[in-house]
Image (tube, rainbow, N blue to C red; front, top):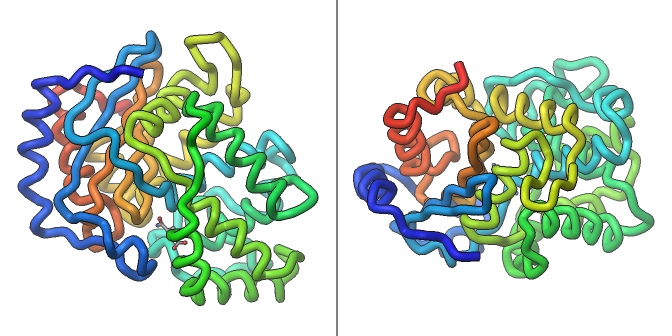
Length: 309
Ligand code: GLN
């Protein structure tokens, strides 16, 4: 699909880029440490199929935590909200995304929400299928349909790099297994989770997925309801309350749109009823969000009055 480069967007991107110097590329997953700090791009996808952009929107990046909202959508379709929310909660934590602290204080050890790592691991555990391969392939097919891009795949390098080093996530899994929240082999679950996080695309694909959420789960171009309305609503609500980790409150005040970020520097935004946003900027702030991406969304929200509040 063609995406038209927009002078207004280029101007906002140039302004937002000034904060990149204060950010740092994530390197706790070694393969992510090789990202170029100064990369920065955005695409906006409208329901009528139009698209505007700024920066190198061909650049591929892995979804990381952005995948959490998509796996949640599929698991809610697979299992229904009652089953899912018996095993993972609905409340923001105020803690970093990889924190283990609250698990021990909850009885039973049910993770507080599906956007923190503990909760996302439980969600991935609930993905239906007879093997890791089948569960991953179902998720990938779903993502290809949402992005309307059958070429979307995953980075074996990033998946392996995370799998080899994910000891904190391993610890979360063992804790969850001890408390019977999950009951599968931890290495198998981590294999699936790290592949999920390593699903790779560009800003345009991401903006299109954001647009589908913005349009209540319906693909306006072919009329198909890919995600049921009530499930799209649940996902967008989590994006508002927990989508930007422990910056979600500040982000809701300053930007006010449902959004989900990942440590690769991606941000997916969904402006309800209007359009989807895909941003890639790997320099992160101290909470793990794309530093220039947040600045850019603040500028866009202010100038175009995008806050839903
Ligand atoms: N794969 C990453 C992890 O589990 C995702 C985290 C993120 O993007 N915040 O650590």
